[in-house]
Image (cartoon, rainbow, N blue to C red; front, side):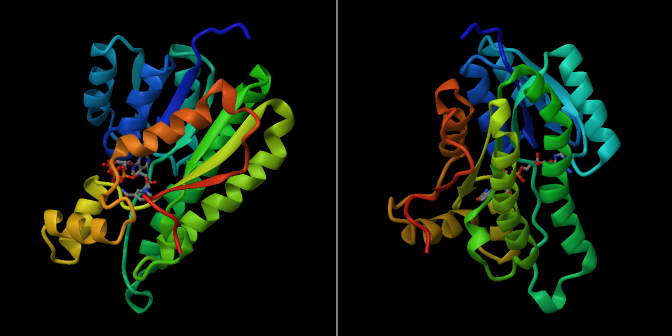
Length: 252
Ligand code: NAP
């Protein structure tokens, strides 16, 4: 089909998995909106994309805030082009055992992951429907299968899977696919913070995790970017409503 440069939005792409996905999609040829809470924090990702010859725009937004999302998506459409690829990656953890978990910890996690993915997808879908093409990729997690100390996060990440499948049903006839990636242990600031919280050095924490992973290593953000690149591609148009565990092995 005729190809203008497509525009992708990657939420939470100032660092970590989101930054790797943004860089990969830019190298795949898309114009990429690098969206995160703080615009200045997006500079590193944007600069890396631009210095590699790609096109990128830093956009500040809180995905959990309706007005902020609406303004950000409009800005992307006018400055970069109609967004037809959306990666719902922004995420936080507020881990605690159930009896110690506060309502704020519960709400904060639900709001960023589920409310955020809902608001972003709703704001972007009209551009996808108009274009009769769209790719939505949602970040789930192996924690969707249950993980001690993460009752909020595991519920949100399981919710992302149901959300993904329903988007696939509703939007398929408009040429829009929706899929989820469920990463296992990926080396980012999120897992570094977990190591700190449990009182372990990050190197020891990663080694302990790797010993439980069939491919005998922890994941890197680029492992997730590779899968996101596939889901975003033209050729993946018959793959929808799927959850791919990118975890170095099957998950139990
Ligand atoms: P990360 O390093 O903590 O990066 C997350 C990014 O999201 C940060 O830049 C953060 O900004 C941003 N963000 C947080 N709340 C936001 C909001 N309301 N609006 C916009 N941006 C927001 O995390 P990561 O490890 O790359 O994880 C990325 C995604 O993969 C998350 O959905 C996570 O749950 C999922 N995941 C990660 C792993 C893993 O092992 N790392 C495993 C499974 C799933 P601030 O810095 O300003 O907070």
